[in-house]
Image 1 (cartoon, rainbow over the protein chains, first blue to last red):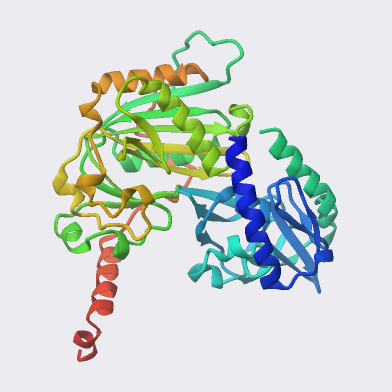
Image 2: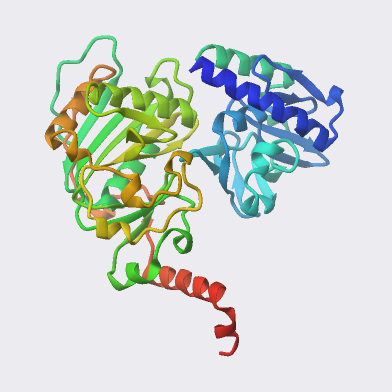
Length: 168
Length: 271
């Protein structure tokens, strides 16, 4: 299992190089290349269930992390709610399908959904190729911005991923 | 539910075992979805055959892509969309179902992602098929050599996962004609049609032996406790609303019309 994950991580490292050049992220924006080679971005907050949130201008943009998409495999379907719905911190708001499995996606914050990424209907693979940019899933008007304090910062999330992978 | 207790094996996590025979697949899936979403226990459900031939698609299944809808409608074959991912199967009394529903911590060291769960489940069946055929996990299927006899699907939440398998104990070749060759197929299939791609488990071991060996193998990982399932609950007492459902005739007809329109737009333009 460790060998399989290492091979997967190496493949992801190669994918990451091209993802960086495609999205023009500066090296400083990538917090770390952790032992598992998944990228973790500065300026975002992270949930232990492997979702990220970017809070900017009163709107929280949410997606799943590079670590999550790597472990899930090729995403073939994304099931998202409609705008206007409500989400709760830690509660499920949708699912991704990959490798014959549906996996719940959980919201890192509570609030009202103001926008949903319709591109994912036609191109679910954006979750794999661009998890932090074009693969965003929903935008939420946070009910309580202080909930962000309960989430992990980039270094904490990196450490969390390393510990999680090492434990398995 | 009435319970019959077996001696708990020290150190092994507890798993409730439900053994069924001929339960309609929709009821089985509703039971599974309810236990997955609302229970905090580990479960194994074995259903030895279902009743009438029924098509079961995964959560994102599109009838127009996966089915030959005209004969499905003509022959009134039920079509179900289940809550887990994965592909399309047609099930009948010759299908045996085995389902594992587990808390994240139930299997020490197992990461709750599709591939690790699939690998772990294949270890159970390696025990079952030891010395029988050339059992392999082929991409995401159970196969003897390169011929599939078991298809898998999963659903994973923050705290739990479900892995269920439909085993082709036997099948009616005519039923396979309701299914189209899927666009997304495993590489090892190599564009083979159904008859060249699948095989019958009954050619390898007796039916009861397969089920008993599966329970035995599971018993080396969990302390199993048999539970009796009460099939007919009072509808007013049901609180959980499953997402697994049977598609309506209207939905299938709509899918067929959309396919016809796509294939023959000129014919429809004149209407």
